[in-house]
Length: 165
Image (cartoon, rainbow, N blue to C red; front, side, top):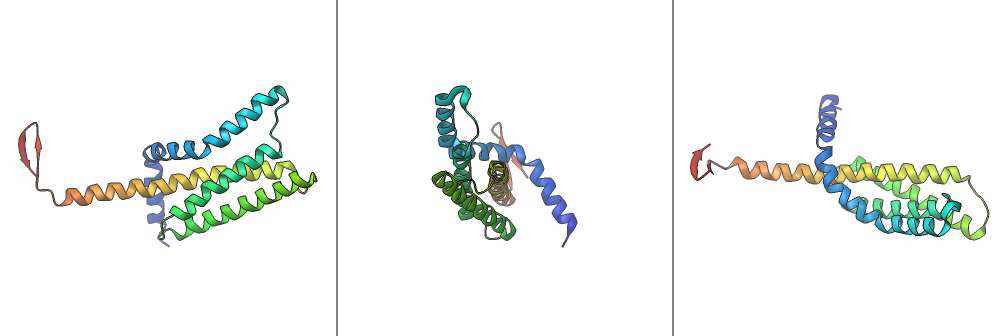
């Protein structure tokens, strides 16, 4: 394992976060827009009685599961570790959601609410991180494509004047 190469890859990823975040933020916003609206409606209806109960947490968990499902489908075959982590996150979200549904329907507590809250917010953070990684691959591929196109270029025009490269 070449630690210098891994360190350089991480550094390049960090440097490209602003570019990657532009592409990812729209995707994340669209993915989480409906749950945000649902939670806002519940908040509006409950007013000061609003709290993060299992119903709200399960909305977050199932949305995370859907988002991670898209990441599993879209993940690059060369990034096996990323795909494995996406699948592991997906399994965690599905299990948490299934257990939360059982608790809601049976009206019986299986695990403390804190486990579901932690699971929801950790998988949300992982979803965002994996989304950034996924879009980073796209940004990197676009950069390589531009470089490949530019490699064969022998000249250009600036303000109507031809310039040889």
